[in-house]
Image (tube, rainbow, N blue to C red; front, side, top):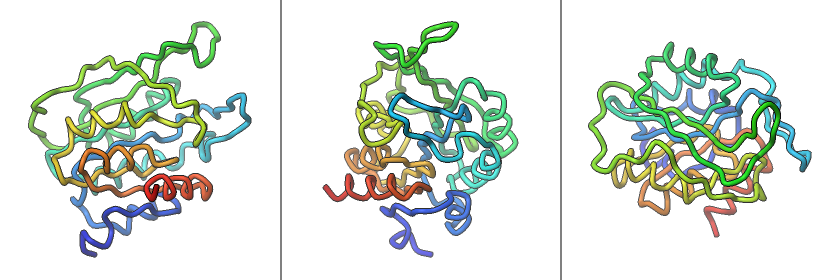
Amino acid sequence: MTKEYYRNRVYQGDCVDVMQGLPSNSVDFVLTDPPYLMNYRPRSGQTVLNDNQADWLVPSAVEMYRLLRRDSLCVSFYGWQAADLFIDAWRNAGFRIVGHLVFNKPYAASARFVEYRHECAYVLAKGSPALPATPPADVIDWAYTGNRLHPTQKPVLVLAPLIEAFCPQGGIVLDPFCGSGSTLVAARQTGRDFIGVELATQHHRVAIDRLAA
């Protein structure tokens, strides 16, 4: 399979199945927002597929590691309630944890024992990547999307600087849980190519439409 065949494509389907069909060491950066394993139910009533089961977590980590070039980075959002599961999956796949990002929200998404005012992601390394010329801060202000296109829609404004810091110009960004396509839009805006995978048909369609707009 040539680079021209799989780059700048958004696949619809199970990400493990799709990734197994892609060549090893073929992407320069992974930036992804998988289900948080918290059975998320926002007030809108929308749901996130596979957010209530973890059977995809280990095989997806293995495939992300395989596809990533040596001495490259991955940034993955995660659910803090299941941090142990995510960390075990990443480490068992071969990743090293080299950083942690907190995205500070100016509002509370919900409240229980505490108000939930942040998102978080780990920076994971395959091999020994070079340090970025301009490392991002580990606390980053959030930009609210309104979740109009996806129940956990991430802002392009927040994702683009991570791609600029961690992916070479002209490189390929992989998002195997691409949702409404925010990572893919950010990759295109910053001069990178992309590969996206989305399980939900409606969100896959949104991602395609955003990229075509």
